[in-house]
Each structure stands twice: as C-alpha cells, then as structure tokens.
Length: 211
Image 1: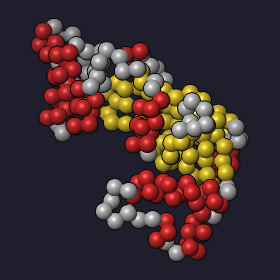
Image 2: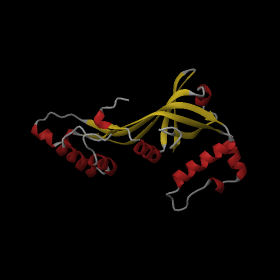
Image 3: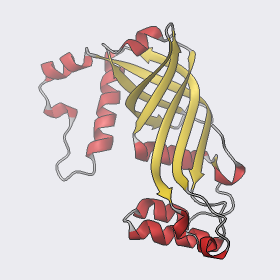
Image 4: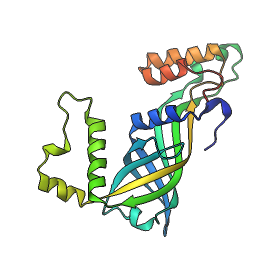
C-alpha cells in the first residue's frame, strides 16, 4: 500500500496487537478465476519467522479455498478505526484557508503464502481459540464444549482451515501526523466532540513519525 514515512507503522509487536484487537480480516487470494476476497476472523501466531502467521477457517462450501493453490501468494487486510476529518477543525483554516478534507484511518496489510488444512484436531483447536478470544470479555463466556459433541463434529466437517505465513507486514496509522501541533489538537477536539474517542486517542498520540 501507499505508505508515506510519517504514517508508517512497522513494529511487529504493535501490528500483532492491532491484528489481535481487530479480529476480522479480508483475505485476498488469486485463483483460476482471478482475484477473490473473503471476510474471516483470524488469529495471530507470533511464529514462525519474524512476522508469524494468521490462522482461521472458511466454510467448506466457499469456493475460494478450492480455487487457490497451496503456497500461492495472498494478502490479509485488517482495518482499524477511521474517521472523516473536516478542515473546520484546523486552526490553520482561519489563518490561510489552504486546507482540504481528509480521512484518518488504521490499516494493516499482511502479505504471505496461504495454505488450507482439514486436520480435525487442528480445526477444533482453531475454533476453540477463536471462540475464547471473542467470548473472554463476556460475563458468561460460551465455550465450544457447551455444544453437543455430535453437533460440534458436524460443524467441523463444514469448515476448512486457512493459514497465512506472513512474509511482509506493514501498517498505516494515518492520524494527522502531517499537520501542525495546533491542527492535530483541533482534530482531536473535533473527534471527541462527535464521540470518536478511539480515533481521538490515536491523533493525541501522533507525532512526526509512528514507525
């Protein structure tokens, strides 16, 4: 992706944490009919290699996995918070008028090679970890073991595992780093006034370079 230096986030630990927080990814693959994209929750595993891997599962009836050769290049895209930024938030608007709207956002691209797996025990482990990841903050977390065993087996037979071994990992934290300190504070205040605390905090922590 287009990645100006002042928006670049390349620290693996920060990118892994953001991937874990987001959960849902767009998995882009290339198959016999060209590009295909699926939307799947993925887990981050820190190894092997410097960037780790992403794992999850697709519906067995999803043609994407059948059309994609094991070991072929793929891309997982994860989006974080985003927000429209109006020039009205910039003090510099009143000074020069030389401002335009923009969009602040977080995006992570994980490039790598994709493989699919059907091993029952590994599938069950991935489903269990995904469930625990998204249920753990609830007062009464649901667990895979709460469902009848025969029902779990039937559900497992309807999915295929996916693994993306990451060979390149990059993030874009576009949070007004290219604006003056006064303009960044104006954006932060404007975001808070409209209730967007998450993006406001990202702008608050922005500097000339986040990478």
